[in-house]
Image (tube, rainbow, N blue to C red; front, side, top):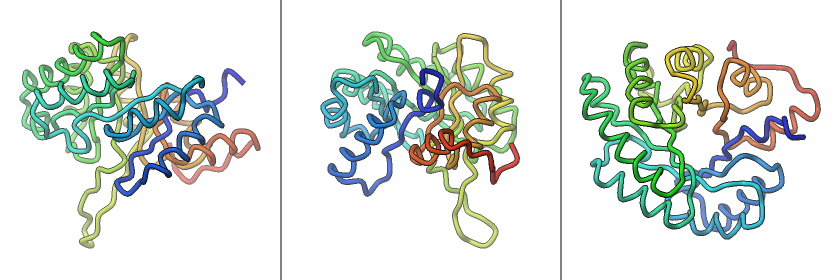
Length: 240
C-alpha cells in the first residue's frame, strides 16, 4: 500500500559491528518491505547502492556520526564522497557542544556546508540534534531555527547512539519522544520535515510519532513495525 508506514522508514544499518554480509541482508529487508531508504555507514554506500539497484529504496548515510564533532571541512568532504558514491540522503549530526554553548553562527555554518554539498548533488540533508544530550528545549528550538536557515530538509531527534551516563553508572538513552517531535514540528516551517529516530521498536509507537508530525522514522526494527501494521497491532509501551 502506498500509505503504508513502511514508506516513512529509513532502515538503519549503523551498528558498529555489522559485517558486509549483514549489511547486504539489511538491504534485502529494506527491499522486501519497500521502505523509504536505508541509512548505512559511510564506507557502505557503494555496497548499498549495488544491493538496492532496481528498487524504490534510496541510499542514505551519516555525516559527522555519531557525535557531530568533526571539523566542518571534514563533514563537507564526507558528504561529497557519499554523494559521489550514490547517497541521496545525508543524516548529519550537528555540533552538539557548539549548540549547547549558543554559538549559533558556527552551528549554522557547519550545517550549511553539508547542505550546500548535498544540493550540488541533488541530495537532501537531515540534521540530527541528539536530544538526549541537550539540557533544555531552548537549545532544541535554536537548532530548529538554524537548520531551517541553513537549508536543511529535515530535523531529526537522535542518532540512536546517544548514550548518557545514568545515576547507577550505566549508560542508556531515550531517543525519540512525542514531546520532542511536537516541539520540533512546532518550531520549523512547512519546508522542513521532522524525522524521529532512536528506540522506535513497534508499530504503535511509530504510528503515534507519525501522527504527531514526523514524516520519516529511523529504525532498525523495520520488520516488527511493518508487520505490526499489517496485523493491526495497537499496543504501545510508551506514552507518546
